[in-house]
Structure formats: C-alpha cells, structure tokens
Length: 184
Image 1 (tube, rainbow, N blue to C red):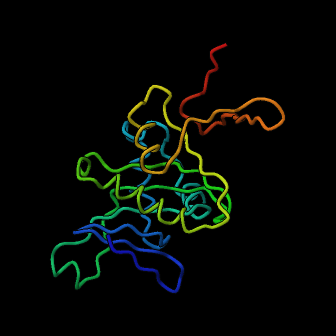
Image 2: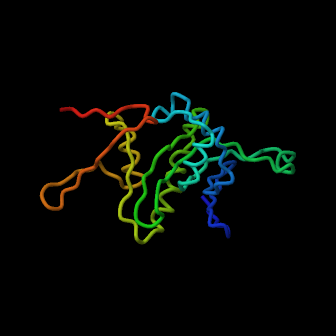
Image 3: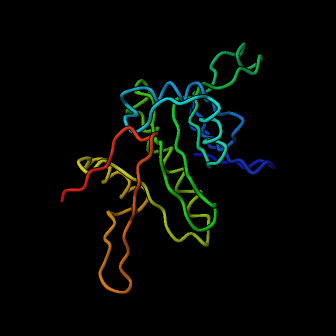
C-alpha cells in the first residue's frame, strides 16, 4: 500500500487497480447517492445532490475507486469509477466520527474494505491531538464490532460511573432511516 500526499493536502493510496483518495474533486456524488439508495447501505438514503455535496464537502472523505484499465481511458483521462467510501466528520485535530463506510457488493471479498479502513487509520494515527474516534454499528452486528475493534482499536462505549462517567446522547432527525429505540 503506497500513499502519497499532494500540495492540496489530499492523500492517495494505490493497490493494484484501485485507488483511495481524500481528494474531494474525485468524489462522484451521483454514484454515492446510488449506493445510499441501495439495501447494502441500510443506514443511509439518497438525498438531493446539492445536500449530498454539502455533506461531503463538510467531511474528510476517503473515496475508493477502480482505476481505468485501458490505455484509451487513461489517455482520455477518464475519471476512476467510485466503488466505495469512508467518511469522517471531524475537526481533523481531536475528534472524528466514522460513518458511511461501504464497498459496492461486486467489489467485496477482495480486502478493499479492510484496506479502506487501514487508510482511515493511517490518517487518524497521524493526528497527535486526537482524543476520540467514534462510529455507530448495529447492536446485533458482531462482525462489524469485531472488524472496527481489530482495525481501529474501537470498543463498545462503556459510560463508567461517578464524576468521570460519560454518556452518549442521540437525537434522530428527518434524514434518519432507522430510529433508535431504547430497551426501557
């Protein structure tokens, strides 16, 4: 996995015929919207393109792309095909919320999701002031919990007790596809 940084502060990683880039210029909002509208990305839904673009612009996005294979495509400088995404909502110093991690089904089982999260982790570990990384996964999804625990060192949040105990508060909005229910 080779990574390079450009003067515009985006980073790129190459592996075989694939590219991961933090360049916002490569993001394909239409392709992301199609993925958001698919059953595999069950936590999201398609949205108006201007709204989606605003969301992407306010995030640190890791786009996963398949590179063009033909020399004609390369000569024509065809854009790579977006096949995945990982999005950090972050101040890029102390906090990051990882969300919208997906790889299209036809590209799964090739280690691309693992590579995508490794690239996210490479960026996160470069921030000396990082205090917390969070993400939300299905409470019944043991595979997801194990994956993020192994790849990023995340653990199920334990609030603790007393003066230093913490809680996570949540409010779902109209863009939420699944309301969270407490087991009272």
